[in-house]
Image: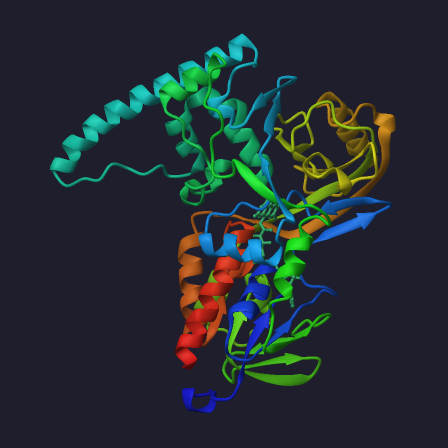
Length: 451
Ligand SMILES: Cc1cc2nc3c(=O)[nH]c(=O)nc-3n(C[C@H](O)[C@H](O)[C@H](O)COP(=O)(O)OP(=O)(O)OC[C@H]3O[C@@H](n4cnc5c(N)ncnc54)[C@H](O)[C@@H]3O)c2cc1C
């Protein structure tokens, strides 16, 4: 086992060159070396091209909250990032309604609106009754019960109708598991919670202007989201980047990574590659950590990049599609956000499939027909090409084992100088800005420890 006295003079090793790895390298003062499996950096924040069409790896819209990150983006890309007011819609019951569903029922069939409104009112009445009971219970030291899972959370906050028509089917499609299998803890920042007045106003067409954490976003004037990623890379100094490099072993006892047979000692390891990929490269893990590692769950995502002639009927940037009869759950149109993402008069579209299996000819036909129904395509014949893609690690499943497993694994890793960070390193649900911030945070932590 390597001791603290042995590690002076070693570099910081960064595994993975997505936004978290890049940001770590940007912010570190200690010398570093970064290993990235692919031929170019960027991870999920990259853009691919075909025949004049450009596609991000599914919709990647940049939402910024942190003033320092905003300033950095302004400096890196002065005048190059365009602020865009979000136009997100729900496609359900054959109509497009505004996002979020729960605050914009207007436009849906009357019987659906009625079912949703009654459900919210019943849920509010039940919550008020439970609140009264809980305040009595609190007096005798009993805490009100948290929802046991995300389905219960939806029923409690939105009632049966909204849960049935949007929350349950949409979340089942996106997470790949039923909402009763996941906890509610991930969702507080991402799921808007309108009050009763807002729900009623939204049902009669007088809803709030916009709700939710992502009401506007920044998007590069040219080149797709990778323009941002590349700009950030220009600030990486004081280290080395190795692309096409996939470490074989992380020898945690000796604090060395083995890449192509070469042993590289590290003083700290920032691991932004998916957590299971890290753990399987670490020999002789303690049995308790091995068994927690076996509990980590994540869903794979298949998506389609579609080059199309013509423009969508409406000007939305993305739609959410909850109904089971459609084989996808979200559609993004990059060329609506920035017209140069497709050739003149054409559209670059990304469809996130709910079915995790390979896309068959018949599901492709169903998808094209559904895109016509949603107005994304004028006609099935407008398809120019379809490219099927996969994200192996897409959505971490926050099931009931998640918290115990990650607590044990992260404690063990940090005790051994390994810092898991980023969406898949820290095994979480987050966005690009969070990854830039995570890189900054871990760099400062390591630099302080080294100083
Ligand atoms: C479907 C989807 C939609 C999203 N939409 C948005 C959005 O609209 N807005 C937003 O802000 N965020 C969005 N995100 C989140 C965003 O993509 C992530 O938060 C962020 O890009 C993650 O960066 P990362 O560096 O942590 O991980 P990654 O981007 O996954 O980077 C990890 C890197 O490690 C590399 N790697 C993997 N294994 C190895 C190995 N064995 N050895 C070496 N390298 C390896 C990978 O090639 C990759 O480059 C979305 C994510 C998904 C899945």
